[in-house]
Length: 332
Length: 161
Image: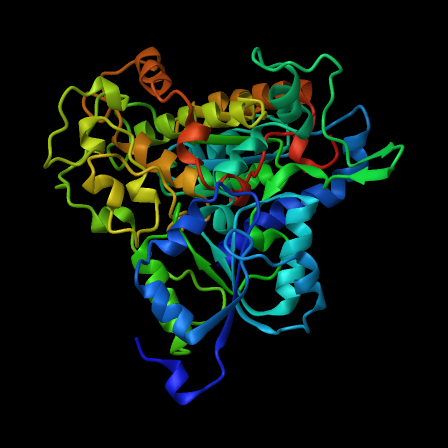
């Protein structure tokens, strides 16, 4: 890595933030191993709630655009997430949506099949192991004798980062692979960033990077992973009847899951040419499922075959529901 | 790109025209139909030349094969407020490209499962086999579909439901 420091004594100013996320992206940032030392050699980290003790008010006190690059992971689920997204947007020159949640909504985005009320019911009321006799659910404010207590508002609909603020770059993956992170940091340090709005990953699908051999695809039934006694180590998993999101998913991960004989679940988001990851996968899967004897199959047999795909929404939109064409379940 | 603009415009114009009307009891559904060039489109033509009457709620888009219809087209139409989507292709063993109709059938079945999960009535999407000689069948399919959609009411995504 070229050291910017040698040319320019002023260090890069970085910030990291997590919104609605699991924390995996924070770990991923450390997965670049010893390269983190190169990063701190050329950069100062101004804000990183998971690692250093800085407060929101420190960010608020900064001048606009005083952060060079902000890596923002997590989806937008609460008013706090949204506030921080807007705040960090105004304080940062470059805002990078880091990881699947910020990029396409991620797994938290699957909550868009329900509303706030339904989520609260499951989390605080209807759960067999939950004891909540007073039926207390989070409220945005409550008056107690010491004064007023407030909580951020919990939204009905989870959003991706670019649905609330302008985003400069996207790093896909759940979490982004160390290689992609390193490359992104290199391009930033060397000031070789691609046009605004680019996804900092190859524009090919996961299949393109996958080790399995692909023949003409024909599958006669869908299997869950546990139903496959022995995975053929050479044959495409789709051809073995396992739903693999590879064809509809952007690569850049070196097909890590496939290398471990696990199917792709789609964390890279849609491929560049497609507007909707799930629709693409429906199209791909339906065209190879039941190709054999399709002429002889009657309506009922076709229906039974399709019925084997138990949960199309959860399977095909595992990471991308908030950014798909229809981004949530219709609210009653 | 030109195609795409026309297509969404088609829906938007309809939305504008009928917004007031849609609020009232005499709701007229707005149907986007993807018709296969080799069969259903010719079937629709035949219905026309034979002076068979059917409701004027349908806007047709000619495609070379029902297998050309990407599920994303259907989602996009629904997102833009179409109340129903008709996809019509060749009868089994009749596809001009051998297997496009089978693919379309399976895609739509799978898409319907997804629509159900998204809280959209799967019956808003309809797949029909209509040959070039079945003008009557085409007209009755559209008539039936319009009747069904009138029962369902406006698309919940159209903003007027």
